[in-house]
Length: 395
Image (tube, rainbow, N blue to C red; front, top):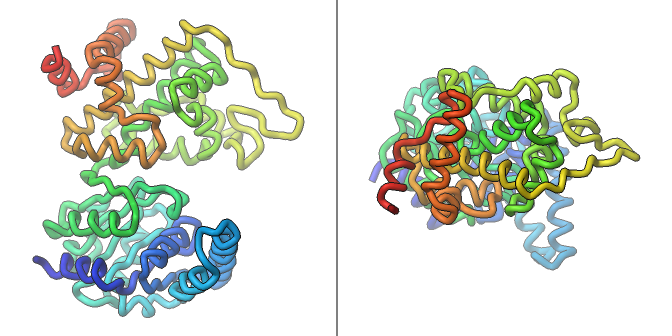
């Protein structure tokens, strides 16, 4: 067993010290999760006011949990007492595991990890919470890149069960498996992903937004009708509602990032509709206007009540999502179990996409994709070879 796996084993048996860099919503959430698992946590941020806001926010969360009877006052106090805040990187010296949750800029992350490496012990594991950057590129800044791994939590970290575990190209063999086990120990639902653009969730979910936007661009359906159609098959929010919730600037940036990182594969092409909304600063709920108007007195448009149209919308989006899930497996990005975990536990899909494909019939999904490919003549609608092979085995 390598030194880093030994560290993880120690963290599992006797909760050790976990460092978290960045006290924003994500970093504070990860610190709460680690403290709830019994770890002593060092939360680091250069902004002392941000650390104060983090402490205040955690107290409010603990107070609510006590009020709801989910923990005692003593348990809440103990959890808060396990989180120590500091503006000094040197405070990370005793950490067995350090998780970074700062701005999504490669140069900044590389610089921070180079500093952290000079402080912590030689067997400390270093993890990045990046959602869009290459873990391999971040690891390149280290003298011992084999200690680096991706641990991508979803916001809010205390509530969202998924953690994508991403080994860098340089990661010591077995370290990813040890981190996977640790995340399960923390009560999370981990999924193992290859270090590729978007990992699992941000890659596989792209058609949920992209195909919805495409149908609106073509005038096939309006936004309210697309949303209603997808809610009626079990999604908690339709694509446009969800983009407004996430923020059109954030969602568009992820789409652009995946599109460029995938060498401009047309399956991930961004939409001009979304770009225009971002340019207008119609970002969704946070600005009061997005695809819908959230200002006081605004009336939500009614969806078109047309069952055939709803079926067309559902078939088109589901075919693209199922195809993307099979392609993630085909390209060895993840296993079937991991893609199913990622999409149900990370973005709350009503069913795993592979299981959903088999339920509706893989041949039907292929027929939907081939019909789109024949109509448009675009590589966007190419069918994954693994999907065709799976359908042939079912026949």
